Length: 354
Image (cartoon, rainbow, N blue to C red; front, top):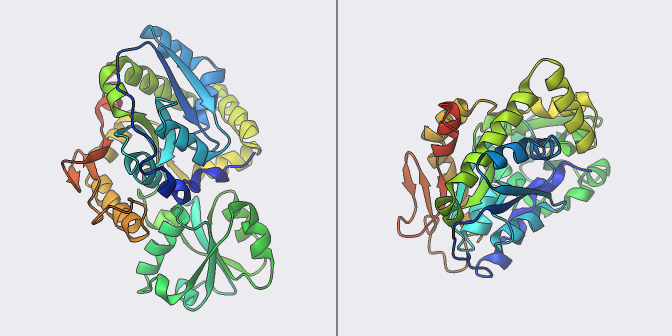
Protein backbone atom coordinates (compact mmCIF):
# COMPACT_ATOMS: atom_id res chain seq x y z
CA UNK A 1 0.00 0.00 0.00
CA UNK A 2 1.08 3.56 -0.54
CA UNK A 3 0.11 6.87 1.00
CA UNK A 4 0.82 8.69 -2.25
CA UNK A 5 -2.46 8.41 -4.12
CA UNK A 6 -4.07 11.39 -2.42
CA UNK A 7 -2.47 14.02 -4.58
CA UNK A 8 -3.19 13.20 -8.21
CA UNK A 9 -6.86 14.05 -8.62
CA UNK A 10 -6.45 17.51 -10.11
CA UNK A 11 -5.19 16.07 -13.37
CA UNK A 12 -8.56 14.39 -13.88
CA UNK A 13 -10.63 17.48 -13.18
CA UNK A 14 -11.28 18.64 -16.71
CA UNK A 15 -12.99 15.43 -17.73
CA UNK A 16 -15.54 15.80 -14.96
CA UNK A 17 -16.57 19.43 -15.22
CA UNK A 18 -19.99 18.78 -16.71
CA UNK A 19 -20.18 15.02 -16.64
CA UNK A 20 -22.39 14.66 -13.60
CA UNK A 21 -25.33 16.38 -11.98
CA UNK A 22 -26.27 15.82 -8.35
CA UNK A 23 -29.31 13.72 -7.60
CA UNK A 24 -32.22 15.36 -5.83
CA UNK A 25 -31.55 14.89 -2.13
CA UNK A 26 -34.17 13.32 0.07
CA UNK A 27 -34.51 11.98 3.56
CA UNK A 28 -33.08 8.49 3.88
CA UNK A 29 -31.49 6.20 6.42
CA UNK A 30 -28.71 4.48 4.43
CA UNK A 31 -25.52 6.34 3.53
CA UNK A 32 -22.06 5.59 2.18
CA UNK A 33 -18.70 7.32 2.29
CA UNK A 34 -15.42 6.49 0.59
CA UNK A 35 -11.81 7.08 1.52
CA UNK A 36 -8.34 6.37 0.18
CA UNK A 37 -5.03 5.64 1.86
CA UNK A 38 -3.39 8.67 3.47
CA UNK A 39 -2.32 9.35 7.05
CA UNK A 40 -5.15 11.84 7.59
CA UNK A 41 -7.86 9.62 6.12
CA UNK A 42 -6.97 6.08 7.08
CA UNK A 43 -8.47 6.61 10.57
CA UNK A 44 -11.82 5.92 8.87
CA UNK A 45 -10.60 2.33 8.41
CA UNK A 46 -9.98 2.07 12.14
CA UNK A 47 -13.41 3.53 12.82
CA UNK A 48 -15.01 0.97 10.55
CA UNK A 49 -13.08 -2.03 11.85
CA UNK A 50 -13.62 -1.10 15.51
CA UNK A 51 -17.36 -0.47 14.88
CA UNK A 52 -17.10 3.16 15.99
CA UNK A 53 -18.87 4.36 12.86
CA UNK A 54 -21.54 1.69 13.33
CA UNK A 55 -22.04 2.77 16.96
CA UNK A 56 -22.67 6.39 15.98
CA UNK A 57 -24.87 5.45 13.04
CA UNK A 58 -26.97 3.28 15.33
CA UNK A 59 -27.38 6.22 17.70
CA UNK A 60 -29.19 8.11 14.94
CA UNK A 61 -31.04 5.07 13.51
CA UNK A 62 -29.15 5.13 10.24
CA UNK A 63 -26.47 3.02 8.55
CA UNK A 64 -23.20 4.26 7.07
CA UNK A 65 -21.18 2.11 4.71
CA UNK A 66 -17.46 2.96 4.84
CA UNK A 67 -15.66 1.97 1.63
CA UNK A 68 -11.95 2.05 0.82
CA UNK A 69 -11.11 2.91 -2.78
CA UNK A 70 -7.48 2.36 -3.72
CA UNK A 71 -7.47 4.96 -6.51
CA UNK A 72 -7.81 8.46 -5.03
CA UNK A 73 -8.92 10.03 -8.30
CA UNK A 74 -11.57 7.37 -8.75
CA UNK A 75 -12.91 7.90 -5.25
CA UNK A 76 -13.59 11.57 -5.99
CA UNK A 77 -15.00 10.72 -9.40
CA UNK A 78 -17.46 8.32 -7.82
CA UNK A 79 -18.47 10.86 -5.18
CA UNK A 80 -18.97 13.48 -7.89
CA UNK A 81 -21.13 11.01 -9.82
CA UNK A 82 -23.37 10.61 -6.77
CA UNK A 83 -22.31 7.05 -5.93
CA UNK A 84 -21.24 8.12 -2.42
CA UNK A 85 -22.63 10.67 0.01
CA UNK A 86 -19.19 11.68 1.25
CA UNK A 87 -15.53 11.31 0.34
CA UNK A 88 -12.10 12.25 1.69
CA UNK A 89 -10.14 14.77 -0.39
CA UNK A 90 -7.97 17.88 -0.25
CA UNK A 91 -9.31 21.42 -0.43
CA UNK A 92 -7.85 21.91 -3.92
CA UNK A 93 -9.41 18.73 -5.28
CA UNK A 94 -12.75 19.56 -3.67
CA UNK A 95 -12.76 22.79 -5.67
CA UNK A 96 -11.46 21.47 -8.98
CA UNK A 97 -13.50 18.26 -9.26
CA UNK A 98 -16.91 18.12 -7.53
CA UNK A 99 -17.37 21.89 -7.13
CA UNK A 100 -16.14 22.61 -10.66
CA UNK A 101 -18.36 19.75 -11.83
CA UNK A 102 -21.44 21.45 -10.39
CA UNK A 103 -21.85 19.31 -7.26
CA UNK A 104 -22.57 21.51 -4.24
CA UNK A 105 -20.27 20.11 -1.55
CA UNK A 106 -19.62 20.82 2.12
CA UNK A 107 -16.47 20.33 4.17
CA UNK A 108 -18.17 18.58 7.08
CA UNK A 109 -14.95 17.67 8.91
CA UNK A 110 -11.65 19.52 8.61
CA UNK A 111 -9.33 16.76 9.75
CA UNK A 112 -5.84 18.18 9.34
CA UNK A 113 -3.48 20.16 7.17
CA UNK A 114 -0.13 19.11 5.76
CA UNK A 115 2.68 20.45 7.93
CA UNK A 116 5.72 19.01 6.20
CA UNK A 117 4.23 16.02 4.38
CA UNK A 118 4.72 17.82 1.04
CA UNK A 119 8.05 19.25 -0.08
CA UNK A 120 10.64 20.13 -2.71
CA UNK A 121 14.01 18.36 -2.86
CA UNK A 122 17.06 19.68 -4.72
CA UNK A 123 20.31 17.88 -5.51
CA UNK A 124 23.57 19.57 -4.67
CA UNK A 125 22.16 22.73 -3.15
CA UNK A 126 20.16 23.80 -0.13
CA UNK A 127 19.06 27.06 -1.79
CA UNK A 128 15.52 27.17 -3.17
CA UNK A 129 16.48 29.94 -5.60
CA UNK A 130 18.80 27.50 -7.35
CA UNK A 131 15.74 25.94 -8.94
CA UNK A 132 16.01 28.68 -11.56
CA UNK A 133 16.79 27.17 -14.95
CA UNK A 134 16.30 23.59 -13.77
CA UNK A 135 13.76 20.90 -14.56
CA UNK A 136 11.45 20.05 -11.66
CA UNK A 137 9.79 16.63 -11.75
CA UNK A 138 6.33 16.42 -10.18
CA UNK A 139 2.77 15.25 -10.71
CA UNK A 140 1.46 18.07 -12.85
CA UNK A 141 -1.69 19.91 -11.69
CA UNK A 142 -1.49 18.24 -8.28
CA UNK A 143 -1.00 19.74 -4.84
CA UNK A 144 2.75 19.35 -5.46
CA UNK A 145 2.38 21.73 -8.41
CA UNK A 146 0.58 24.20 -6.16
CA UNK A 147 3.32 23.84 -3.53
CA UNK A 148 5.97 24.63 -6.14
CA UNK A 149 4.13 27.77 -7.21
CA UNK A 150 3.86 28.97 -3.62
CA UNK A 151 7.53 28.18 -2.97
CA UNK A 152 8.73 30.11 -6.01
CA UNK A 153 6.83 33.19 -4.82
CA UNK A 154 8.99 33.27 -1.68
CA UNK A 155 12.18 33.77 -3.71
CA UNK A 156 10.83 36.05 -6.43
CA UNK A 157 10.61 33.35 -9.08
CA UNK A 158 7.77 31.91 -11.13
CA UNK A 159 7.23 28.81 -13.23
CA UNK A 160 8.56 30.74 -16.24
CA UNK A 161 11.99 30.52 -14.61
CA UNK A 162 12.12 26.72 -14.78
CA UNK A 163 10.62 23.70 -16.54
CA UNK A 164 8.02 21.44 -14.98
CA UNK A 165 8.34 17.79 -16.01
CA UNK A 166 5.15 15.80 -15.46
CA UNK A 167 6.12 12.55 -13.73
CA UNK A 168 3.93 9.81 -12.31
CA UNK A 169 4.13 9.39 -8.55
CA UNK A 170 5.06 5.76 -9.19
CA UNK A 171 8.17 6.89 -11.07
CA UNK A 172 9.37 9.81 -8.97
CA UNK A 173 11.79 7.94 -6.71
CA UNK A 174 13.48 6.05 -9.54
CA UNK A 175 13.59 9.20 -11.66
CA UNK A 176 15.28 11.18 -8.90
CA UNK A 177 17.84 8.39 -8.49
CA UNK A 178 19.03 9.02 -12.06
CA UNK A 179 21.75 11.58 -12.71
CA UNK A 180 19.68 13.79 -15.03
CA UNK A 181 16.90 14.56 -12.52
CA UNK A 182 17.97 17.26 -10.08
CA UNK A 183 14.76 18.48 -8.42
CA UNK A 184 11.40 17.04 -7.43
CA UNK A 185 8.27 18.17 -5.65
CA UNK A 186 6.39 15.37 -3.93
CA UNK A 187 4.76 14.09 -0.74
CA UNK A 188 5.36 11.50 1.95
CA UNK A 189 6.41 8.74 2.03
CA UNK A 190 8.13 9.52 -1.30
CA UNK A 191 9.46 12.79 0.13
CA UNK A 192 11.24 11.06 3.01
CA UNK A 193 12.74 8.42 0.71
CA UNK A 194 14.05 11.00 -1.76
CA UNK A 195 15.34 13.34 0.95
CA UNK A 196 17.45 10.50 2.37
CA UNK A 197 19.36 10.04 -0.91
CA UNK A 198 22.95 11.34 -1.12
CA UNK A 199 23.47 15.10 -1.58
CA UNK A 200 19.72 15.77 -1.34
CA UNK A 201 18.30 18.84 0.32
CA UNK A 202 14.70 19.61 1.21
CA UNK A 203 14.52 23.29 0.28
CA UNK A 204 10.81 23.91 0.93
CA UNK A 205 7.92 22.06 2.52
CA UNK A 206 4.30 22.58 3.46
CA UNK A 207 5.17 23.66 7.00
CA UNK A 208 6.17 26.96 5.37
CA UNK A 209 2.63 27.48 4.06
CA UNK A 210 0.71 26.14 7.07
CA UNK A 211 -2.99 25.61 6.65
CA UNK A 212 -2.98 25.64 2.84
CA UNK A 213 -3.03 21.91 2.01
CA UNK A 214 -6.14 20.85 3.93
CA UNK A 215 -7.52 17.32 4.23
CA UNK A 216 -11.31 17.06 4.45
CA UNK A 217 -14.36 14.86 4.67
CA UNK A 218 -16.53 16.31 1.91
CA UNK A 219 -20.24 15.52 1.82
CA UNK A 220 -22.99 16.37 -0.62
CA UNK A 221 -24.61 19.59 0.63
CA UNK A 222 -28.16 18.68 -0.36
CA UNK A 223 -27.85 15.27 1.28
CA UNK A 224 -26.51 16.84 4.47
CA UNK A 225 -29.27 19.45 4.62
CA UNK A 226 -31.95 16.79 4.15
CA UNK A 227 -30.30 14.41 6.62
CA UNK A 228 -28.58 16.16 9.55
CA UNK A 229 -28.36 12.82 11.35
CA UNK A 230 -25.81 11.76 8.73
CA UNK A 231 -23.61 14.74 9.60
CA UNK A 232 -23.99 14.18 13.33
CA UNK A 233 -23.11 10.49 13.15
CA UNK A 234 -20.07 11.00 10.94
CA UNK A 235 -18.73 13.83 13.07
CA UNK A 236 -19.34 12.02 16.34
CA UNK A 237 -17.58 8.92 15.02
CA UNK A 238 -14.61 10.93 13.76
CA UNK A 239 -13.87 12.57 17.08
CA UNK A 240 -14.17 9.29 18.96
CA UNK A 241 -11.65 7.88 16.49
CA UNK A 242 -9.42 10.90 17.18
CA UNK A 243 -9.61 10.24 20.92
CA UNK A 244 -8.25 6.75 20.30
CA UNK A 245 -5.59 7.89 17.85
CA UNK A 246 -4.21 10.63 20.10
CA UNK A 247 -4.29 8.69 23.36
CA UNK A 248 -0.97 8.01 25.07
CA UNK A 249 -2.18 4.84 26.75
CA UNK A 250 -2.52 1.32 25.41
CA UNK A 251 -5.59 2.30 23.38
CA UNK A 252 -3.59 4.91 21.49
CA UNK A 253 -0.66 2.60 20.86
CA UNK A 254 -2.94 -0.12 19.56
CA UNK A 255 -4.76 2.35 17.29
CA UNK A 256 -1.52 3.68 15.80
CA UNK A 257 -0.09 0.17 15.38
CA UNK A 258 -3.25 -0.90 13.58
CA UNK A 259 -3.11 2.12 11.25
CA UNK A 260 0.62 1.68 10.64
CA UNK A 261 0.06 -1.89 9.46
CA UNK A 262 -2.94 -0.85 7.36
CA UNK A 263 -0.76 1.86 5.79
CA UNK A 264 2.00 -0.56 4.89
CA UNK A 265 4.54 0.87 7.32
CA UNK A 266 5.68 0.36 10.93
CA UNK A 267 4.76 2.35 14.03
CA UNK A 268 7.81 4.62 13.71
CA UNK A 269 6.96 5.36 10.09
CA UNK A 270 3.33 6.13 10.87
CA UNK A 271 4.30 8.33 13.82
CA UNK A 272 6.69 10.23 11.54
CA UNK A 273 3.87 10.93 9.13
CA UNK A 274 1.63 12.05 11.97
CA UNK A 275 4.41 14.39 13.10
CA UNK A 276 4.36 16.20 9.75
CA UNK A 277 0.57 16.40 9.75
CA UNK A 278 -1.24 19.04 11.82
CA UNK A 279 -4.08 16.86 13.05
CA UNK A 280 -7.11 18.52 14.59
CA UNK A 281 -7.64 15.91 17.27
CA UNK A 282 -10.04 18.16 19.18
CA UNK A 283 -13.16 19.57 17.50
CA UNK A 284 -12.72 23.01 19.06
CA UNK A 285 -9.33 23.33 17.30
CA UNK A 286 -10.93 22.52 13.96
CA UNK A 287 -13.74 25.00 14.62
CA UNK A 288 -11.23 27.76 15.41
CA UNK A 289 -9.35 26.99 12.19
CA UNK A 290 -12.48 27.10 10.03
CA UNK A 291 -13.70 30.29 11.70
CA UNK A 292 -10.38 32.07 11.10
CA UNK A 293 -9.73 34.14 7.94
CA UNK A 294 -7.16 31.50 6.91
CA UNK A 295 -9.58 29.28 5.01
CA UNK A 296 -10.97 32.06 2.82
CA UNK A 297 -7.48 33.43 2.12
CA UNK A 298 -6.17 29.97 1.27
CA UNK A 299 -9.07 29.14 -1.01
CA UNK A 300 -8.51 32.37 -2.93
CA UNK A 301 -4.90 31.30 -3.56
CA UNK A 302 -6.06 27.82 -4.58
CA UNK A 303 -8.76 29.22 -6.87
CA UNK A 304 -6.28 31.58 -8.55
CA UNK A 305 -3.84 28.73 -9.14
CA UNK A 306 -6.65 26.47 -10.41
CA UNK A 307 -7.93 29.13 -12.79
CA UNK A 308 -4.43 29.74 -14.13
CA UNK A 309 -4.20 26.07 -15.13
CA UNK A 310 -7.74 25.77 -16.47
CA UNK A 311 -9.03 23.58 -13.64
CA UNK A 312 -12.22 25.58 -13.06
CA UNK A 313 -13.57 24.76 -16.51
CA UNK A 314 -13.31 26.22 -19.98
CA UNK A 315 -16.23 28.56 -19.30
CA UNK A 316 -14.76 30.02 -16.12
CA UNK A 317 -14.08 33.74 -16.77
CA UNK A 318 -11.99 34.27 -13.66
CA UNK A 319 -10.74 32.68 -10.43
CA UNK A 320 -13.93 33.67 -8.62
CA UNK A 321 -16.24 31.79 -10.96
CA UNK A 322 -17.07 29.22 -8.27
CA UNK A 323 -18.34 30.64 -4.99
CA UNK A 324 -16.63 29.30 -1.87
CA UNK A 325 -18.51 29.93 1.36
CA UNK A 326 -16.60 30.29 4.64
CA UNK A 327 -17.49 31.80 8.03
CA UNK A 328 -15.28 34.76 7.03
CA UNK A 329 -17.37 35.39 3.93
CA UNK A 330 -17.73 34.16 0.37
CA UNK A 331 -14.84 34.14 -2.05
CA UNK A 332 -16.04 34.27 -5.64
CA UNK A 333 -19.51 34.23 -7.11
CA UNK A 334 -22.21 34.32 -4.41
CA UNK A 335 -24.72 33.11 -7.02
CA UNK A 336 -22.64 30.01 -7.80
CA UNK A 337 -21.60 28.64 -4.41
CA UNK A 338 -20.47 25.05 -4.82
CA UNK A 339 -18.01 24.58 -1.95
CA UNK A 340 -18.80 25.33 1.70
CA UNK A 341 -16.68 25.30 4.84
CA UNK A 342 -18.91 25.11 7.91
CA UNK A 343 -18.05 24.69 11.61
CA UNK A 344 -21.58 23.61 12.60
CA UNK A 345 -21.22 19.89 13.22
CA UNK A 346 -17.70 20.14 14.61
CA UNK A 347 -19.01 22.81 17.00
CA UNK A 348 -21.71 20.39 18.14
CA UNK A 349 -18.97 17.87 18.92
CA UNK A 350 -16.96 20.48 20.81
CA UNK A 351 -20.03 21.44 22.87
CA UNK A 352 -20.99 17.83 23.61
CA UNK A 353 -24.25 18.14 21.66
CA UNK A 354 -23.94 15.11 19.41
